[in-house]
Image (tube, rainbow, N blue to C red; front, side, top):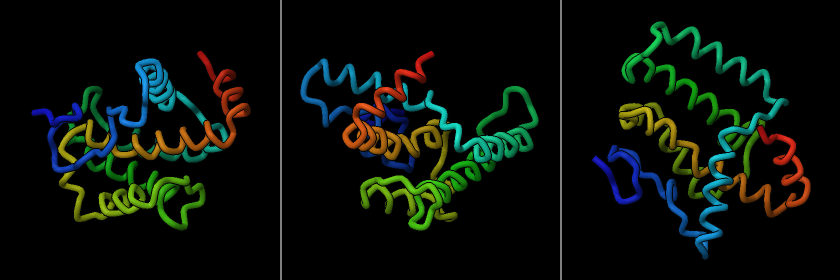
Amino acid sequence: KSSENGCSSSKIEYSSSKRNDDCDSDDDKSEHHLHLKRIYKLRFEYLSDLHQELQLLLNNSVKSENPTFDEVKDCLWLLCKNLYYQFIEQSAPNQVNIAYELQKKLQYLMHDSNKDKFESFEDFQLLYHDAMAQTWRLMESCYSFNFKSYLRSQKD
């Protein structure tokens, strides 16, 4: 099952994931896709404690080499909740600047009563996509030269 924006149809709606509504030309869309792909490859060394904590949680929760979704759903939920408390929640220690509407949507989705709305790996994978894209655009616009220099230094 697929919805209009290419996401699997689930109980979770993704607003701008996998869309390019804010891009004017084909060149802009191509560059936009390139940037969005690079978002997932960035590593922020100052978050090493968080990286280790999340990796430990994952290692302790996943027992088989090729786990099914049902086997890892609880772990993915905990990972997403942890990320929410670190970066999205109003009083988060590393709160990112995202649109209020998106912040409220994530707050709603991270309520324990919504855990069953996550029906696939993709639901978890796309959960923070829009927040990451908004943060990327903010960094580009506010710290253009320095941010681009940082990105060049992170190329593989």
